[in-house]
Length: 105
Image: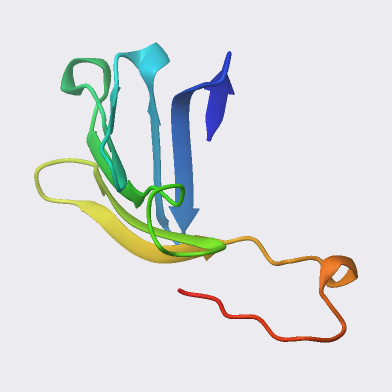
């Protein structure tokens, strides 16, 4: 994700041979909803079509993770689609050495 002055302006991702890039600098759109963020490429500024949907981890009950999917349509007859879950590992140095915890996700 790319931010400018605290506002998201672009996103890109890849998994295997599937990849996408969407950015407002190219006329693409970012739509934020309560529990999700939807990105769509401007058909006039791209040779292909792309769209992505990601959960908004700040507004879901999931902790330390997010999920999403995207489609990259290279033409009317080819392209790729991918989905996944994403998160950041907690560094071992900040893991508690005793007690208990509950996580959702």
